Image (cartoon, rainbow, N blue to C red; front, top):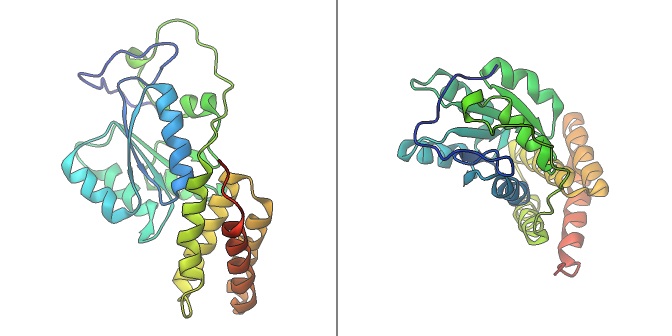
Length: 238
């Protein structure tokens, strides 16, 4: 439900930059997904800061108050649900509180925790991103007149994709990851694969999650690590 806030002191939005004047805190562990969101905010006029964990998000929020928080549900030190509960109950409350995940099943618990909306990954279409935020912006802070939804699809830097893979392989090739680390890296790589359109990587991440549930993660863990290392061995795109 839209929140009746006025965003005091914000610059007036325009048809081309409908989110002008908004500040966004993105709580997201994937560099690739973060780069996509940065481009979407840039094209829309919003300012963005990033926190890659619950801990760093809380540090940011002690220093400044953004207009919008977009929290990924799978983070290295816990679930974004924890942060959503905290911010939904805070006084004053964050004006717009959104959840994001590559798992559509995350929408219901996020909304029950107090989120105003849910953005499904991958996030790449400018018009869809703008609509997801504008649905919660009061009328007086929206651009005047009719506005065509832009068809643009952003293309994040592939070096950010490699950064995500490098982080994942460190966990996958540790002496023997704990069960929690296996669960984290499987969902992390699944989200990265969705954002990057890498069907083979997504299948391998899902296979690891399934094998973990069956108590035999070893072979699936090794297959995923080998696949990630193969991706890293490929020449970087310029």
